[in-house]
Length: 216
Ligand code: AMP
Image 1 (cartoon, protein in one colour):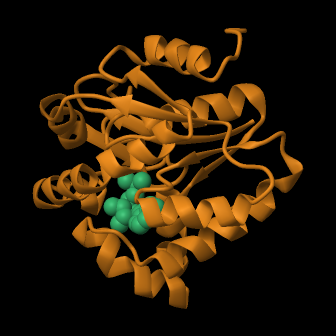
Image 2 (cartoon, rainbow, N blue to C red):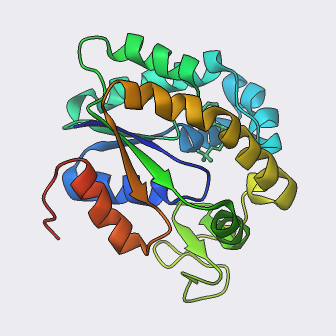
């Protein structure tokens, strides 16, 4: 299984990628998570990436491609992978084609949702600073205030989920989205799902889109 999930921030592609990875044993490769890990460890790469991530703009391709190729190598032993947040532009899609060469992406799933719904989702989103689990103050609140249900870690609002950065990230997405979906539509691998539906429904649409049976 070689998949990529495209969609604006807050469209739920990360949640669905994590779920698919848990159920089917495929590697979940989120370039956003990998960049945040790099930033937290304080590596040279992380220090270079930090200002871009915090401003909500794209990190230079050279940095993202490096962490992506490390992620893909680690995923070699799994039964495939799902890319989450990569590619974000047509040049990144071309670079990915080069990296995957003989084994290209089989399906690219695009998560469609209105900007209004996204703004509401992103503003309420809280992330566990320890395990990365996502919560939502309105739609999926934690049992205890600011505490992760899964590991007891502290829930925080990501710096790039602050209002100004959210607007910027949506703008960045808008600019690149159409050419990118056009690129994959032209190859006949693009499938679209309605990401405004409840997560369990979106999960079913994703399975249909990738031609997998619902085993749950
Ligand atoms: P995400 O968690 O996918 O929303 O990503 C958070 C941030 O990481 C983005 O706003 C970008 O600054 C950076 N980032 C993640 N993936 C990429 C990518 N494919 N290309 C450039 N920057 C990225």
